[in-house]
Length: 271
Image (cartoon, rainbow, N blue to C red; front, side, top):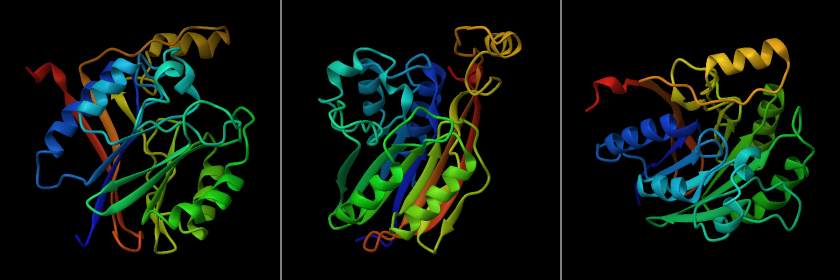
């Protein structure tokens, strides 16, 4: 067994620009000598900024993404209710009420190493949800009996809640806690308790000159007037990809490293 198991986690993908740069980046890294063993991506905004269509689900699976995490916007495309139970890689937030379609965690196996992936929503400045704290307290010990590596995508708004949740998960032996939702990559990547890889927000994948992936004009009008305004995906040829690359002990599950990635490319130069 390899001395390291590498996982690439891609921040919130926003619309076609996000899908474009993710597919381009994966085509490069998966063909390189630095290819990860497993790829996770947050896809709740992958289809025109709201939700995930089945077509885009299959497109991204073919690009090499092993697991899709999500968030509160995963329900924005109505066909999600038709295919979510058929997907073998999509994880919706686990702390929706019992009976919600889909699953809140999955276990994958790659070359003898098992990876459990959990998706959870925060509760500060978010809609009322079941407790993510109770969920990990009850579920993580059981998952660790089966999987060497346990990864949590914590889709939350408040920085303090994310950091506190990361430290709490570290006390439970979670291998990584990766923040999503705010679309701005933070520079606080670290390893808690010499075991748990952590970052407050992994960032986003989309148009570089944008408001977290959306057009400036619509965002400005909504913020200035406080009136409803439909967000539109930003346009532009310069795209940005935010991610983290992590290495884990494949036997004991502890993180050995976490490294931020900020990849920017001008696609006007791509034929």
